[in-house]
Image 1 (tube, one colour):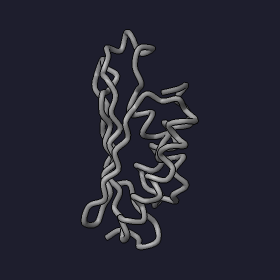
Image 2 (tube, rainbow, N blue to C red; image 1 turned 90 degrees about the horizontal axis):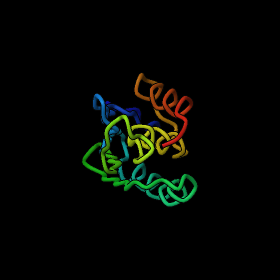
Image 3 (cartoon, rainbow, N blue to C red; image 1 turned 45 degrees about the horizontal axis):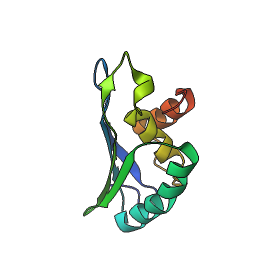
Length: 120
């Protein structure tokens, strides 16, 4: 059961071999998914504006979780400059969300990707 005070990232997908992924999904368990979704939706316009990121971010509260989907157009890894990497965009968005997540492996991965990615 998620910590009522801290949401927990429990899923993070999107990587494909030899391709810049067209979609990345994160699932966040929460005792209050409506508040988590509201916070993410509040941060979304600023994140997109600050990064100039050409992605779409969808935040959907569900029964006890929030599903976040970042989409763009996929491209072959030999042409990464032509598209946004949705995995690094997702990591950047979650890290910039001002939410304090449970310290688990997914949260560590978000911060690792966010701190090592050149850009998205």
